[in-house]
Image (cartoon, rainbow, N blue to C red; front, side):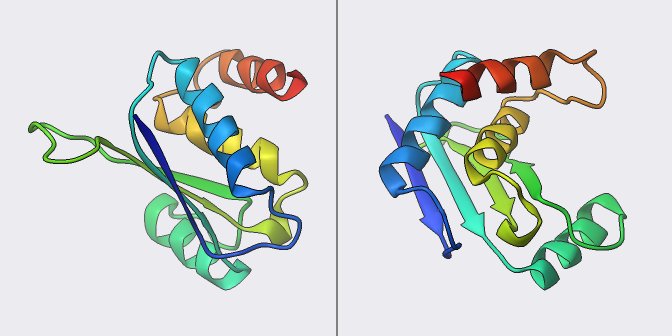
Length: 126
């Protein structure tokens, strides 16, 4: 069972049912159909803090993903990770959701010769 939690609010944010659909499609592309994902909308100041702390980069960005690796058997739903989105720096919130969740599956557009971005574009065309 897939569990999607939406935290915070953003202007023009898709309805929760649409967020769940996008998360489900992105995860299914990697063969994942169960677990817990949190999608958090934050302001520019918060995402800049996270960007500096976790990536060593100054300033705000559009989306950050924080996968959670588990070595033990989970006691509840599998924790897949968190996707943090700053609407102020994001052109398309739906695309940011898909992008962030694809990162949770282990994909990385900076090292994969365009596969992640091609899959992202395909998902967005649906």
